[in-house]
Image (cartoon, rainbow over all chains, first blue to last red; front, side):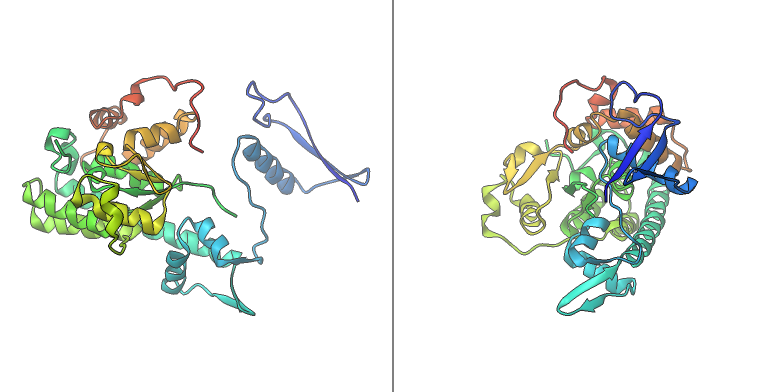
Length: 148
Length: 186
């Protein structure tokens, strides 16, 4: 079976690293044109545009199981830190044979929880700093942490 | 699966002034890099600010606690070879954290106090790290600056004032055009 994905539309912008706005996607499987749902076409075009711009893409089913190392890379923490976070946030850790796996959908939930927690903590940090008058001190001269 | 972002360990001297600290914290929350802050750096921050009279003991403790609540903190075992990589014994903890966590970068104001490379970790200044990270995407950086400024409520801070504060901190490249043909960090 051969599958072709063709982007039709205006020429890419000057850098040749973009998918031009207004492009359409044509998908052929064994020479037969396939009609894609509109939202899927939009999603794929966005993915292609991101890829063309040099971003890393991951296409994963939400029900897929990932290893703890893959999960750590996705969240952006070390593996020991990930395990600690999974325990703290009661994220299910599945065991298949000798291996531990995490459902990708659970990982997305954890990512949202971490982001929310960090946002709240950062907001509180700024509030404390504002009340301490730290935003008026922006000069190196006042920075006791800089060595001469 | 990887989001392909660098990991950095941040030295204490970039946790103050608050404008510089917020820049790194905000960008890490937005996923531009993974931020690791040593527990010793947090303690040093509170202790030094308090001793210098910049803030009260109560506020120093609060800031230390709130900052730790954002990203947690890291600790590392002692390493007798740490002294081979820094001229300052007070910075051994950073070298030890580098050895344990193997980040891509150790970000500090005092690059001259360290070997340029600790194991595989590059020692770099905060301004240079962010210049290289956003060298071909200055618009994204400016968008994030705008987002940081919008977090400030009391007092409100303009983008211009915030950028001026960063320039005082050594971010001279903010007033320059992006250099051409400079190798990307990513």
